[in-house]
Image: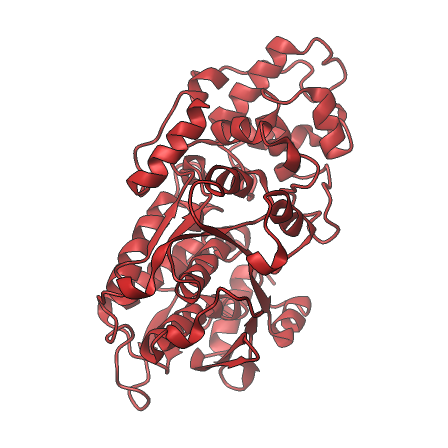
Length: 458
């Protein structure tokens, strides 16, 4: 059975996904929350998360209507992982009502955030057809956000910055540039070796780090293993809603992401299908508007690295040598905290760093010479635009890859029997051209824009 046929069949079998309720409590300083989703007719899911106690949390200072609204919205983004199992036609929201603008906003996020899921699974649908969102008028009648839209919560928020850390080069650059210039708290969701070691290398202890331990429902994982529909969901959008909760809990006015301008390029040319949709400036702008209207008008969510491209970030990272042995950008090796040396993320990271870090030092970082692994040539063809579709990974633009390849071709005399043997790429821009850019299409407050420019000029 094709995935399209499976999609159509599952939609007939499962009529709706219902977001029934959310729950939260604080016990011994730990914050717990869970959600109740039901895939009609009878499959229940109960994902949850825990935020371990830290001295900088102020849960009691958050008014209940605001906290209810924050947790409700995390449930709204968590539910998409459970919807995609069977893709039911209807999503029913019970905790709160949504207005028409909210419904349009969520449908846009779900549809664009699932663009890769639909494409990879060969599912043809439209934003009008894939889902209907309704709320159950027999339950609560109040509208989400009505108590706090827009509210002046300046008294709850201080001149402090929350910095999500993923363990790769991007968040390292943000940490390094901000840690001594603004009061900062690192944030990690589901810590692993690289995230913990990067935060430690920045000088933060575990007690100085905000941590979210997120748990998927085991029934969903079982259904995935049994062959129900599965695929990519917009994790960065999920992270965004968690950061707003943690912003209030830590009294942090600013939330500084590490998404770059390169994330705006579609994965599939001439379409809006983008693996990095929820890292794009389009999502960032939509999210900022939504938060200001329906959650809080004072908290500031932005990507600190948005003015930069991948090569500028790589140059800044090359100076942060304390992190070179601990950072990891490889999803395939995340469970073992290693570089797999076989995936698009590994090869792209190598190429992006190659103008600024020697081949010898790159071999030490990655544990092998990626240029000598001819099995990576098909991945290079995807990265540099030799084939139509880029890898569905968080990688840079075709132009950036070509600029790096050209730099290697010009500077490395030992390329025989490598993946670059016989390669000749044309590109309008050089590495130096990319390094000289500064994208003004960003949401940085002046303080942060000035810090970034100073960092580029150091």
